[in-house]
Amino acid sequence: MAERKHRARVTGLGGIFFKAKDPKAMVEWYRRHLGIRIEDTVALFAWRGGEDGKVEGHTVWSIFPADTKYFGDGAPFMINYRVKDLDRLLAALRAEGVDVDRDIEESKYGRFGWVRDPKGNRIELWEPPKRNRAPEKAMPME
Image 1 (spheres, one colour):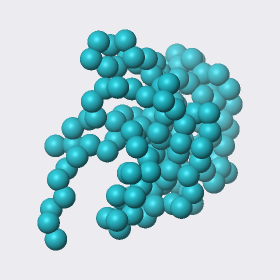
Image 2 (tube, helix red, strand yellow):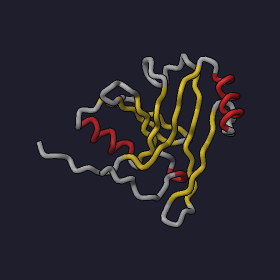
Image 3 (tube, one colour):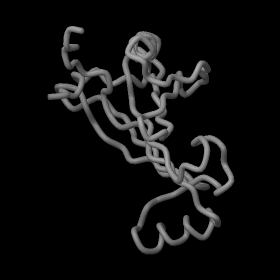
Image 4 (cartoon, one colour):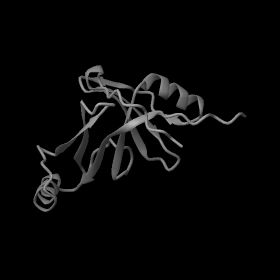
């Protein structure tokens, strides 16, 4: 089999999500000790991108209840990656034998798909809505 050329598929980090037995207590800890501005259980870290630095985006940080099933079975955290073309990426990953969930979720926040890495960790892939897509070049993989 010919070696696949390494090409960027992920354009950035969309979010970091983790579980807590007492999300409210964790929110207070992160507010008090690290100064993170959290609304409910979510914080948004703003950034700028694009060649001229005028494109605004954000990375989501969120605490989930310990019993959430959103991360998959037993996983304590989940990472969300930004992608430009979710359908194309999921099709390519399926062709490469990656464990890809069948479901795709569509919402006002964009389109979401999921894969599992070799250790079984659930990874969320996020195609932001067109108004929030960063025009920056994809991150090089090599």
